[in-house]
Length: 521
Image (cartoon, rainbow, N blue to C red; front, side, top):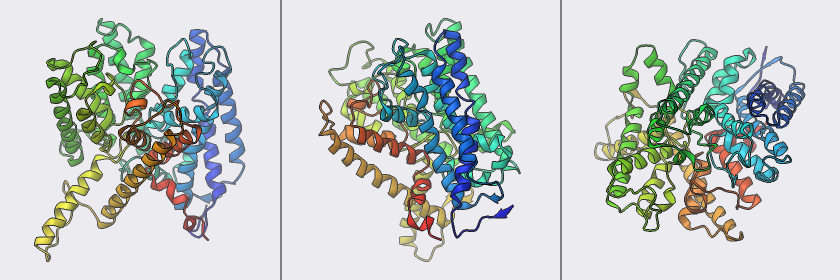
């Protein structure tokens, strides 16, 4: 193969490989087809989606012969376009189902369908569905919604690197651009084997979650956690997605289910490479990992604060419905705090109760958790714990060198010294992330002023911006865990689609291809 030079972008090659990815992904709608057949529902939305994916995939593949190698710039373009094209094609089931007797007008129009699809594949979990039930949506359509998050969790392109030889040559570059975090660790000599190992771990935990959830039903601790719900929620726990076929999310289930979901959310927010080492007998690589310890420590600290607020009554608004008393109830206070902190830090976005009824003090603490994120190399979104660890250590070094200007003190994570280029990239990413958050808060707040019945507060506007940019899902107020994003204007929804897209790809991968220098020969 001839090597692509760094002087131009072979966009035809990138588009051709996008076609290959889409062509193979056309098999995904066959799962909801089976669900539709079982429940006696229409298979048309999913057969149509598969047919469109095959047609688009084959069409894009014809744009370029496979006689050139994927270069650095082409990898950027492949990743960015794949995560745009696939959610666009993922709208087909919603659009087709919206014209039938089941699901009519519940996802109305292309913009809403694109919002729901992008939220699914990017594992954001925000929704425009104003009614989530089997009376308004088919079992198959809601399962497609769940499946889209599972496919996006570990990474669609990581999956394709694992199964397609033609992507293995540039696989390391592709995985680094797609995987959330600073970089993806090469676990085996061949990058294709690394991709397979990560997906096996991911799939294994998904199966385990489904079995645990259903086992609670078998022993009588979760009456409504049947096979469908067990599979559906396992598909959105491990990718930290948060979609649920239940309108009240995990609040619809017993406390036993809520406790059972927590450890799987924590696992989903952990670097999956650490589990590979643990399964290989190197358990100390997990227990001694600085990021993992910080991740657990921060969650424990935030949980303790919120639990104390809820238990003492300072964290619950007086208008809260008296259906599950929290003040003075230690188990309930701990469960609600533990669950919601885990759901937000890992960016899963599930809800065990409507935290709109929390006191502003507890909501403010929870808002802080929106910016933490899980570990690098996990399915979680937002800023990521490892970046905050590096910022803290860099700040400590700066204070030390102010006192000892001649000292040479590298920043270390564990026993590894972090190079200055990585530190610079971390600070750049956080500044861009926070700048986008601030600008988006203002734009979405101003837009809401022109929409009847919106009336967003400042806190609500901030939560909308971070919920979509950080791929978290719910916010506060009008976009709380039991509400939805349906009332926003079409331009605002499209802007949030953009935020979800760039947030899933860690912002820079998309912004790079939008710069003139990227295309300059």
